[in-house]
Length: 119
Image 1: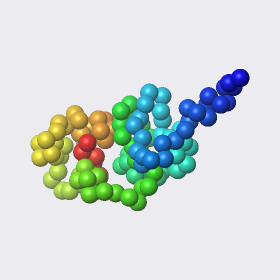
Image 2 (image 1 turned 135 degrees about the vertical axis):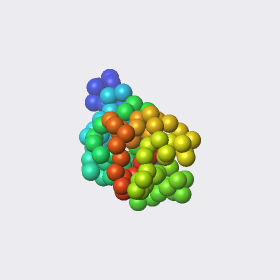
Image 3 (image 1 turned 90 degrees about the vertical axis):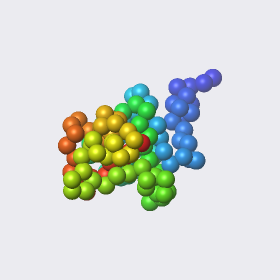
Image 4 (image 1 turned 180 degrees about the vertical axis):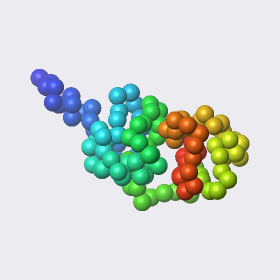
């Protein structure tokens, strides 16, 4: 006989081959921190999040925070004096709206030193 707890264990299995998690409906950062045995602050730092708000479809690094590939480095923009979302979007072939969505921004205001995900 299958019990509820055995179903729960199966649905909570972790893909240990991946350092990333694609956010699904109902996911939240606190639950992901428990699932991947890390802290909220580590998840926020690793994914350049200012809040705990995440969106369905967002790709989050959930493990091996010190491992950053060259490809991943090219997907991050560090804001410098004079930068704005329009200029960054134009230079990187994307849109302001996409940059805002990817980075969970509620406005187009960015700060010097802020790290922005580009994809």
